Length: 208
View 1 (cartoon, helix red, strand yellow):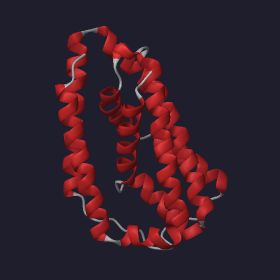
View 2 (spheres, one colour):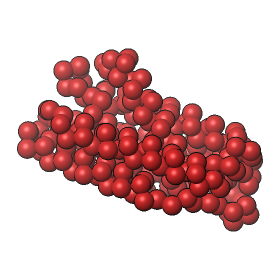
View 3 (tube, one colour):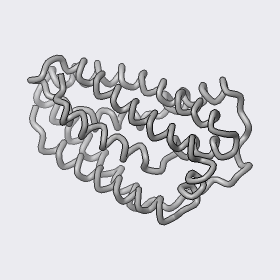
């Protein structure tokens, strides 16, 4: 099992990354601001459900790679580090994104939930991100890698539910400020970029 301090560090990092402006949390925010808190919560539940699918796929795939060969693990490690640096570069050059009231179609609760699932499952970047992110917090010496990846995936889902849930609840007030504040979005993007760079360095220096 994973040490509690490692899980706390993973959870804290997951919260920061969930706060980083992106299509998922902006969609949650915009739906909440336009159609109420419940709309954002249904989207959030859908996104979290989609993460379960990514967790299952990545857990078994990563476990196989880690146990297969040193070369395979080295290639995965370098690809993951390169992808994290790419995410950092994107975060640094990202401009503020706003969503105008009334610009989104009104969807039913079921449609919002399904939209969240589809948005997440059809986004290959989530799987790539998990492949680069999860291995840094798992250790083959601490038991089954598959169980550790499921544990980390569960913690990431909890962080997503927490952050997106708060965004849904406060979208009517603070959400509008976050959505339309270039300064806030730029600050969060810079923090996320630093996190991505730190994770890339950690991954590149990690051992099998």
